[in-house]
Image: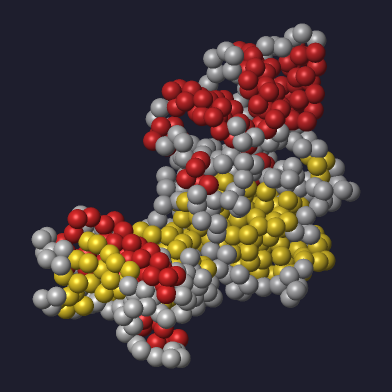
Amino acid sequence: MKNLYIALSFVVISITVSAQNKNTKIADKLFARFEYVDAVKEYQKLIENGKADPYVYKQLADANYNMFNSAEAIKWYKKATETQQDAETYYRYAQMLKAEGKYDDANKQMKKFATAAPSDLRAKAFNENPNYIPSLLDKSKLFDVKSSEISSDKSDFGAVLYDNSLYFTSARNGARKNYGWTEEPFLDIYKADYNTDGTITNASPVRELNSKWHDGPITISADGKTAYFASESYKEKQFSPKDKKANAKYSQVYLFSATKNGDSWGTPSSLPFNDKSFSNSNPSLSRDGKTLYFTSNRPSSVGGTDIWKVAVNADGTYGEPQNLGVKVNTEGNESFPFIADDNKTLYFASSGKQGFGGLDVYQIDLTNGEATNLGKPVNTEKDDFAFTFNGSKKIGFLSTNRSGNDDIFIVNPICAVDVLIVVTNAKTGEILANASVSMLDDKKNVIATEMSNAKGEVNYKVECDRAYVVQASKDGFEGNTFAVTKSKGPKAKVDAALQPIDVIVTETEIILKPIYFEYDKSNITQEGAFELDKLVQVMKNNDKMVIMSKSHTDTRGSDKYNLTLSDRRAKSTVQYIISKGIDASRISGKGMGELEPKEVCNPCTEAQHALNRRSEFLIVK
């Protein structure tokens, strides 16, 4: 049902006249009237009676495409494309294949589309990055998505929450006659209560705004006094020119406004930029009330339907509608805009950008950004659209047909903090590029490691209300760790200032901070690695120097065991130095066990035991 407001399909879909004949007359008339359910039945009768041809196959495919019956559409597009077709047919075929998760087959059809329409923005995007799906799957999860109790067995979509009222569009009113496109009742605007416990109850139609035609979706001003919604031009007794073949007049989708009088809405009025030659729909009003975003196929649109905006002036007049341009719009369909509370972040649905299939939801910073796919689980291989978000309640709503019907899902943001780490020289303040920067969780697990850029920066996204640690290191500098305190975000900054290596070198020894080991273990710890990096730097600066590492244990355990343990620690130390590019002939190790304790004690404290578990570095040459 949402296709009505995606394709604005009151506009006549062209039929290839040369392929029509007396056999297809009944089916073509139903198709032209958007009565796709019955049209499919008539085309299938022709196939059963042996009167099928590529035209019939294509009409069957397009009818199923318009109803998003992807499996059936694929079946008939496969038959239709056995003969040469127009570029858009290959594109639609690819979209349906993606909707079934058949990406390799979809790419084959996209190649045909790109060959037939090389200047199309969708074709250019495909040629530049044909295998984009893995990058979409690798995107960080931004939201959790779950079904809601507000959905019915009919189409429900376009939910938007204002204060404690949820408005949405639905075909659930079974008492009204069905619309031929999907054999569902006409759409109405509904309002429900959003309760403090998160439940949604008491859904009922907004009778003052609904008509006997399609109504919705809706957007409401921040003060709750003005509503903008979509309905049909039948209300204004305005029609497109009569289609003689279909023997029908067609309504356009218009935008209407209404003002609240007490607890009810006043008489709706048509917006002045409506026109019987094109449609306007899916409004979204900015929270400052100054800009109305909407969908239209008006002249100068890039594709089938585009996202537009219009200024709402303080005196109640409107500016000239403006197209949002090719950063948002494609030759496909863009629809269902939603402008966030910050008045700059726009969410919208697109079938023309690179996505998982069908409609995907994207977001863009209108001040200076590029449109990005929201990734899974917001987007799927099916149609995902009408994404809205209430900033004060931190909850969003998504419309999707992933379950086979247009339903409303609840969206909960995953709380995340964008951490900016800047690595500098602690003495001079100089930016340090190409430093190794790791993010560790509160259990010391390394989440990721990246090199700092030319500005000394690394960015990580981490969970809210959780402590993290940043480890930074660079040749010539002492490695160090830096705490990332618990935060709800959205941003945090860590100044990772590294001290230049300044090591005490005597005639007989290189003096470092103790290279401590954990009890009964021989692996190099991160703290130990930071110290050993200093030794590596000294040896790189003095390429003739030869070092012997002496490893010691505490006094716990047997003499034999401690000698073996210290030998393992010595070997671990040597292997670490070699791994950093020092020739094996320049470093050797010897385990001393507990023969040379630094702290002579009986009994020993834990601190004294730790001091005895150490490594020392003697200059052999």
